[in-house]
Amino acid sequence: MNNTNDISALFISLFTNVFMTLTMICFIAIIYNKVKQYKTRFIKEKYWTKVQNHLAQILIQSLEQDENWDYQKSIRVLEKSLKSKMIKQWLVDEMLSQQENLTGEAQQTLMKVYKDLNLRAFSLKKLKSRNGFKIAQGIKELEQMRQFECYTHFFRFLHSSNKDLRKSARIGLTALAPNPISYFSDLSEELNE
Image (tube, rainbow, N blue to C red; front, side, top):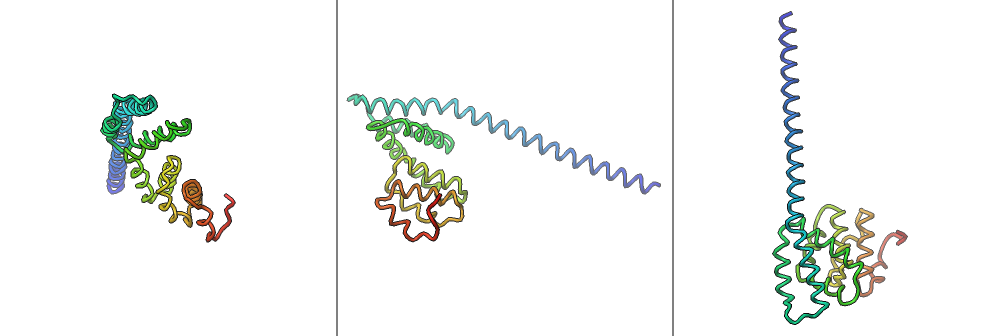
């Protein structure tokens, strides 16, 4: 009888310790997520408004062609605000959104800002990822910002096992390559996507 009580007590003690450990892990995970959300919100509040204002100022000033305005200085100020990948991604997303609504000189200025802030390299870096979504995102960014000299980076994704990645590479090549039809002549499958 004493043996069963010892085993029961040991089992209860073990169960209690496991339960407490799991509770602590869950508590730490919740705290970590809250801190991460707070940090994201803090960064967005602190830097994002400043970044948006600088971008808007660059677009407006370039259209007004103010002689007292220094484009390079504005780019340097905006560049200093791009402290993290998260802010860079927000800026690229904002530029893609604006690019759809802009035409003419404003659109050209937006693409020049994209290039001058070295966001092209930011998008190209995504093509080296192992994550298919990130690669497709990089291709889309380069394609929509009309970075014509980057189309050669899309070739290795034409035969990808990932259907969405193949589709993104084809769209990118079609939009950016000088003679896109020639790149599709050796495909082993139909272009019916």
